[in-house]
Length: 280
Ligand code: ADP
Image 1 (cartoon, rainbow, N blue to C red):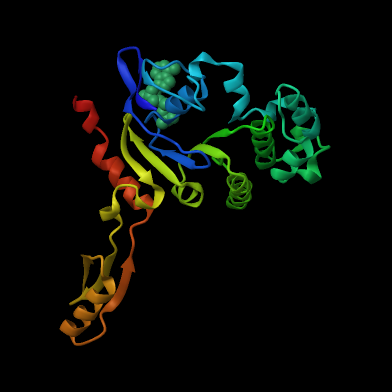
Image 2 (cartoon, rainbow, N blue to C red):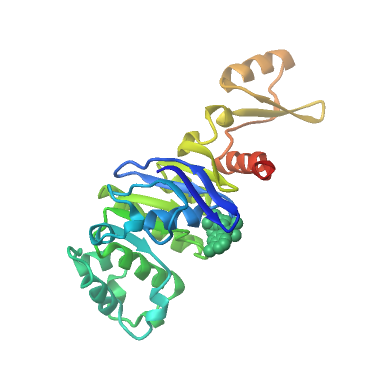
């Protein structure tokens, strides 16, 4: 994707966004509400028409909506809850019939951990279970690229972890996944590479563990000296602590080494860039 731009009315929702996603990779798009994540994802899915820029997914321009393109991508939408009385197996079977080369129905139901619920009406499932049906529907067409837009919003921690296992299974199969999420731990757990969008612009791009630049993940040593908290950023914390102990002639008090988390780096990026783009 090169120089993607989407304008609603007079304002740019997304501009100058460029990134590539490799086959088999899970790419995570992060950003605050209104940053332009859904707009970007929906353009990639072929659900929105871009204003300008080059976009290719599996060699196709998504907005042409060719049959080949549609059969090779999977979109997880929040829909199963609306399908009421039908059983999990009925719904998955129905969706399978819409694709030229579907996956095995039982395999997909098992992949999302619903073997025991296959004959249950969807309306009797819990929210988390119903969402797994959504994932099953995204998978049944045997997609090469799976789109997951905030897939675990509203899940309790246990259900989220079960969902992550489902995704890891798909990653092991080599599926390419495009994910948006508000949960930084989810991005760290599942993402290989990612980007941060703020006010419609991509402000960071790279491997998840290096987002924001290696510098931003430099460890920080903190300790208490004369009753006050001190801190020092260093790439060699062990060496620094040795020096510090020598200087203090004692073990430093309340000594800690902290490596800034993705969350810390993300919040810094957002604060640094939010509002800045409005100036132009
Ligand atoms: P995110 O998914 O990161 O929350 P969106 O892509 O939904 O962000 O929105 C990006 C910006 O575009 C926001 O300012 C939003 O208000 C605006 N926007 C999104 N969809 C429309 C639309 N259909 N019409 C007008 N403005 C829109």
